[in-house]
Length: 251
Image (cartoon, rainbow, N blue to C red; front, side):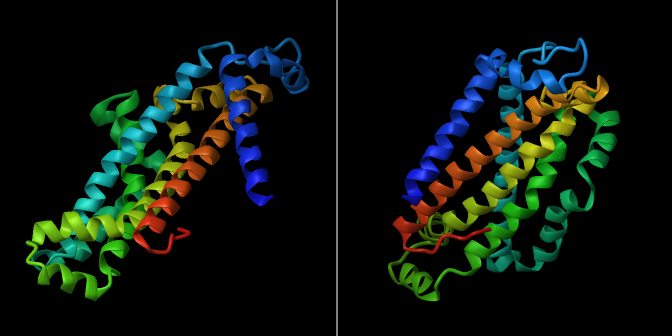
């Protein structure tokens, strides 16, 4: 029963998302009371579908780049030759959490200009820490018996890493990716302040014109995508954990 209710809720959320993107006019009666006098109830300054795809694309690109660097750093500092670099790696991963994304945007614009690039930089830095810490946890909590068995089979260091350590740490790493991706989805809205094509355009347009209907449209779309993405990545994480016989993390 619980599973059925959860699946029904996800289906309803997906239908709502598709309706907002392809037939937003169906929501006009609901949004009209909060649109303001003589103001449009449905966002009409661009394509909601195009902004949504761009928003998701920017988030995916930044999260993937952060994942590659974070996992690479975690691998290096868990090898004998790289343990001394752990404090430096943590400092690098903490950069994004130390500087607010708005500050990163302000610093990046004079260097790379307006548009998508400063937003990618801000989201990339913001996603480093959760992925790095989870990758570090996943690689350092492997049972010592597994490592010894891999050595006993004559595996090289590279083979142990790619065939044993990373596959076993994958569910924990994925938990960090899930957290970074969902946070970045919401944070990406501020990219529109520097002309990045994200759903922040809809929210900002609503704020500038005192049109709550626009704010609701942008906010609801981002929220639904975040919930569905979280559930999808969580399901993938749990499936991977079951296959590997490791407990899924709730990070």
